[in-house]
Structures are given as structure tokens and as C-alpha cells.
Image (cartoon, rainbow, N blue to C red; front, side, top):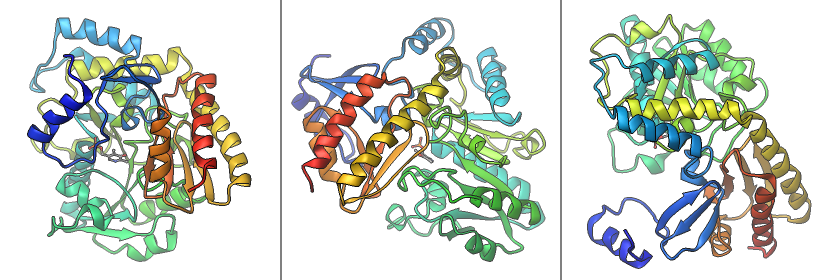
Length: 396
Ligand SMILES: *Cc1c(COP(=O)(O)O)cnc(C)c1O
């Protein structure tokens, strides 16, 4: 494999369906916070794997665990038991609320499983509606695109799945008003990711829990982006005085190996009845080996604390920029999930940083989003922030 970027891009033009907007760069190799293109140019990556690569590129302990696993067992179907999946489920359960896991291959699938669990649990009681939030993001399957309350992801796909009700994020009164006898659940990202790194107002998630308890509804937290140490806790719900009934995980779950999981309480788990849901590849030995190695690496290297150190440094510096640049609206973030909301379009700053070999993201039009590797050394993190600062200070 030694094609030039241009040759690789030509393959895409000819043979790959153009449903993505792709940068005109072909990436070939990564190590920690760095990634190289086909011409050998090195980039500092503050958005590695769209938030999946929790430790940046090719973390050694995960790579070593994978090498051992692929030589022993790649894949056996879920009609058998397999040690790695059992151990992985136990480790996740012990770091969360002590529930049980269903494994799949992506965030959307984890949310599909959650939606099916809600329906299987609630439909017999005549309840099937799920409340979700404006500017949420839950995935691209038909059910999860319906749950995603953003018209731009639904246009042309109609009719969407019945039974979803949308309310503004952070508006407890609107949630209460939306509940009727048929409402089965509330599904929410505890911190909105794609919607612009939105942190809930104080008491909001606690209020949702109370509404669910009062109205016999389930509380589902989509932690696909916030889960697995990204925010400085294992799961973002642990920042709040709330325990959800269901959490879904994917992005950082296996440090970049495709996987998803839905976790629910021991009491609710039987609702996902035998035969009613399945995933051929879900939780296979390779994913499980990566998942176990990810948890071990977080613990062995104290990475929850490191995520919090990155948050503090980012906020300290960005809040200073906010006093100097009048187009900065707000600095937000929890752990290594950082958002800088601008009053202007953010795309030009992404371009400018890329020219200076720093990869960042802009979401929701005007929110600069960083999901850096949680083990990015502080001096390297500062170098990247220097580039971003210079790009911002050139103005719009
Ligand atoms: C990325 C994301 C998803 C979808 O995950 P896929 O693996 O792309 O299906 C769902 N929910 C949230 C909060 C996400 O950030």
C-alpha cells in the first residue's frame, strides 16, 4: 500500500458512494496524538477517530491485546459462550450501575437495542412513545434517525417511525407537558455532543429522573459519545445525582475497534427477551479483547484524572481568549469533550488549523469541538491550543 493521496482519492471518486463530505487528505498511519498522510505530512489530531480513539492512534496495550486475540479466536457467533465477552460485560457492569450488557457494533445499533428494550418493556402496558430532544443525535438507522430530533437528518426519508416526541433540551416544563398515558421513556444524551457540547442546566437530568419515576417511564442515556472515560468519569451520568435505567455506549468503547453496547439494570434486562434481538458480530472476541484492554488502560494510566486536567487547561486558555475575542460566545466542556461556541461560522477555523497541521472539528455550524486523546501530554495539548488560538486571532 503506497499510493499517493491523489491516487487514493481517485479510488473513492470511482468506487465509494459519496455520502460523506471528506477532506482531500488520505491518512495512512497514526501514533498517539499524531497521524500522517500518504505524503508523510504529520498532523496533530484533536479529533482522533471522531471521538472513538480515546487514547489517540494505535495505543500499545490495546494493539498488543488485539494481536494476542486475533491469533487465538477471531469470531464465534452468539449461539455460544465466550470468555472475553463475559469478562468484558462484568467489567462494564462493575464500573456502572451493576447491570447487564447487550453487545453490538455501533452507536446507532446500541440505541436501536435501547429503543427495542423500551418497546418490549412498555408496549404490553399500552405505552410506546419516546421523548427525545431538539438538536440531539442518536444515529442513522431509521429508528435512531427518528429519535434524532433534527430535520436535516430526516428530510427525504419520511415517513419516520411513529412514536417519537421532540422537546427543547433543558426545558423540564416542556418535557412534563409532553408526557401522556402512552409515554414509555425519555431518551437523552446527558451532554449533547453533535448538538454542540451542550451541558444540561442544573437539576435537569435529576428532574427527568423524577418525571420517569412518577410516570412509570424509563430513562435512557445515550452515552455513545460521553461514555468510557471521555468526560473524566466512566460514564457522564456519574456527574449527576441520577442513575438511568439504560445507557448506550460505542465511540470510545474499544479505542477505535467497531463496537457498541447497551447496558440496563438486572431487573429490566429480561425485557430484551430471548429471540427478540440479536447481532451477528456483537461482542465478538476481537471487540471484547479491545474493550477489556481499553478499561485496563484507563485504570493503569489514571486516564480519568487526565481527562479532567485537559478540561481545566482548555477552559483556562479558552476563557482568556473569550475576553479578547468578541466573537466567542461560550466555553463549554466536561473532561476531554470541549466545545467553544462562536457567534460566527466555525468552518474557516477548521480549514485554517488543518493548514497548520492541527485536526479539529466544528459541529452545529458554530461550535469548535475537540475530543482529544485523553492521554495527550499537556505540552502537546498546549501546542495544539497555540495553533487554534492563532487561527482564531486572525479573525473571521
Ligand atoms: C456518534 C453517535 C451516535 C451514532 O453512533 P454510530 O456508531 O455512528 O452509529 C449515537 N449517539 C451519539 C450521542 C453519538 O455521538
